[in-house]
Length: 180
Length: 180
DNA sequence: GTTCACATGTAACAGGTTACATGATTGG
DNA sequence: CCAATCATGTAACCTGTTACATGTGAAC
Image (cartoon, rainbow over all chains, first blue to last red; front, side, top):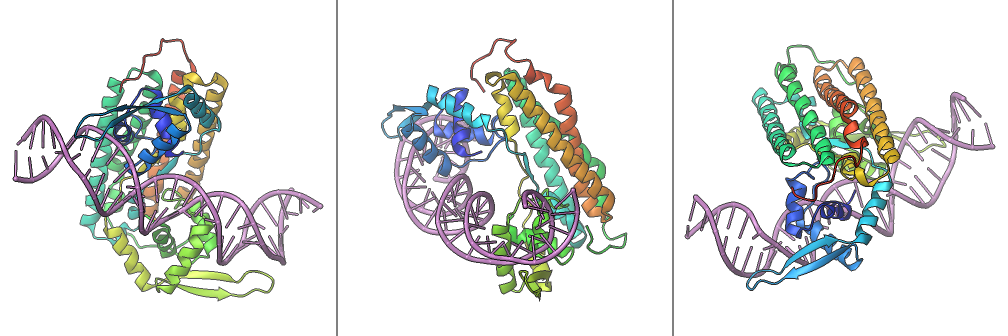
C-alpha cells in the first residue's frame, strides 16, 4: 500500500489537513498500516487533488500558511474501493529487536536486558494507546482492527515477560554452530 | 536495518551463497526481520566483499554461473556488533488486511469472508513453518525469536476466529460518521 | 524566553523492487 | 515437455525519507 491509498483511506472517515493525516497515521487508529512522513503526504495530496480524487478547500489566515482541508470525492471513494479490491498483501512484521536477540550471547548482558525492557516499554505504550482508541471509537470495524492490535500486543508482552530469561542467561550452554 | 546488515547477520551463522541468503531471509528463521530481493542482496554482497566484511570463495562449474560462497570475516563480525549496538528501531507492523477491514461494510460480504479465510490460511502457514523451525533449531536464542513469532501467530489466529463475526455481520447496526 | 504544537512545502538522497537476461538440471 | 529449483547479475524505476526552509501562537 502506498501513501496515496492511505490518504484516501483516512479521508474516507472525514475531512482533514495534511498535518492531521500525518498525526492520524502515526498515532491514531490508522497507525497499524503504514508510516508516512510529510515529505510523502503533501505531494500525494497534491497529486490526488490534480486527479480529482480529493477536493481541496483553502482557508487563508494572515501570517500563517494557508490551511488546506481535503475531502474525498466520489471518484476518490471509487478509487479506494478499487484499490481495496485487489486483495490485501501479506502482513509485514519486522523486528530489529528479535534480530538483536539472535546475537544476545555476544552482547553484554546489560545491553540485552536494556533492550528487553525497552521493548516491553514500547509495547506497553502502544498497548495503552490502542486501549484508549478502542474505548473512544464506536465504529465496530475499527474496533475489530484495534482489537487485533491489542491481542498481538498482549501476546508479545506475555511472551517477553515469561521468556526473557531464555536470552538473559547467556553462555551457560555450549553454542552449536550454524545449521538451519 | 538494511540488507547489508541482514547479510552479515545470516552469514554469522554459517557460509552461504547469495541465493541461499535470499531463501533464509524469505522462508528461514530470519524471515521475521526484513524482506530482501536478489536485486538488493547481490549488490550488497559485492560491496561487503570490497569492504572486507565478508570473504568470497568461488566454485566454477562449467555451464553454470560460478557459485560464490560468502563467509563473514572478523571485520564483518565487528561491523555487525557495532550495527547491533545502535539499539534496535521500533518493530514495524503493517497490515493491509486490517486496512481492508475498516471498510468491510462497503465491500460485499463474500470478499470480506474471503479475505479473512485468506488471512487465516496465511497465518496458519507461517505458524506451521515456525513450529518446524522451532523444532529443528537448537540455538536457544533463535528459539526465543521463533517462539515470539509463534506467540503472535497464535494470538492472531485466536482473535480472528473469535471475532470475525464483528466484520462479517455488516450493516446491521447504523453507521456513525467520522470522529476519532 | 524557549519549547512545543500548528502548518506547508521542496530537493537531494537512499534504499529498495521489478523486470530483464541467461542457462543447467531434476522431477512430475 | 513443462515447471521448478538452482544460480548470478544489471538497470530502470519507484517510493519514501531526511533535511531544509519558514513562520505563528500558546504554554510553561
